Image (tube, rainbow, N blue to C red; front, side, top):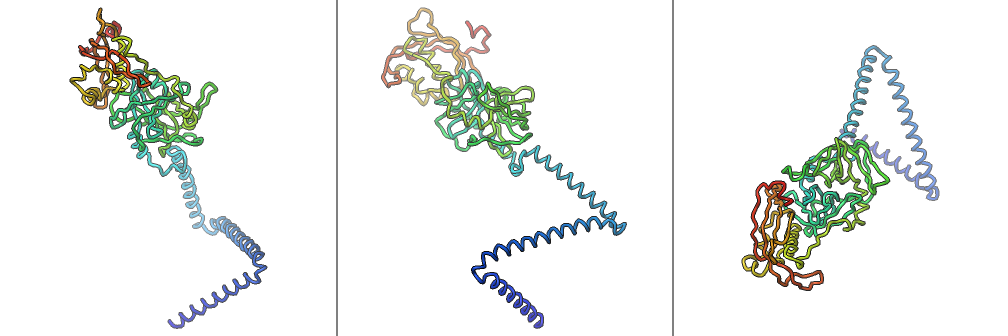
Length: 432
């Protein structure tokens, strides 16, 4: 054992002395050190490459010579070649699978299940009197949707997956690009799908997910999520946006929902679909256009309860439609307010999404009474229920309605109602 230890120490000492001598030779004289550093580095690199090439050529030569040494080697070579060919084509199959199911290599680690879960928790319904669709948050208090979903509707309702109802206080958009932005008071930072700052990139046949409420409120439940693949990117001189074409089948109600990639990043906005071919506005185009949105083509609320009783009744139900509850409450007369307050009165309309007014006219030869026909769309247990009403409102002229400058003026206010529900009205009820 002592001899072995002594040999180890002796060998280590010799190596150390050789290394020390090499370093001394390498560093001194100091003025030659930079030249030595370059030449030595180049020398050892060439030496390494030469040995690597020689070893590679030797390996190739041995592989070629190996099968011809014996019958046993020849049979082994056939097995080795078969295994290599099998592994090669297996890799091709795996690469094709990854391309079809993930699109890009860096998206392999993304979980589609978590993306779907987030879509179901964050995509919202857009419901109005003129149409229905879907939408999603691009900011903590701004929801993006298609313009055709809210066209002609001054107060569309946003229904969150948990049933919460929000009404936008501001609507802007671009009707030519078919995009609209709805701003609300409350904030939902966990629901945001960020618009891209730069051009997005995607590969041919890349898988994507589209989410929206198929068939609108006719079907109860969470958002529908459809998986498909990108086919191409289309542009037109007549359109201010580009369209991503996919093989997804969009149906009515999904308009305005998001199109995301395998990792949940926003790719586009659901726009139109026909027979297995759908188009989505590219997210990069949306990001570019949003700052230029205006309310020029957005439907406005224009009412004046000071003109007549029928105008006051029309204004009253229009405010309910827009969920401008304070404005509607201000149209209740002092006599009516003796039997209610703001909290109790607004609680009566907590689930109303829409009010459609079919008629508001002077009742017979009265001076203070209006006859009205209207319907309400109520959100009950995740479904939209419609109820129809008709009757009269007696009004009284009082002060207390404020204009935009904060000046009080006189208006006809709600005094007493005789409204009854009409069950299953015939078609001519809407026109008589």
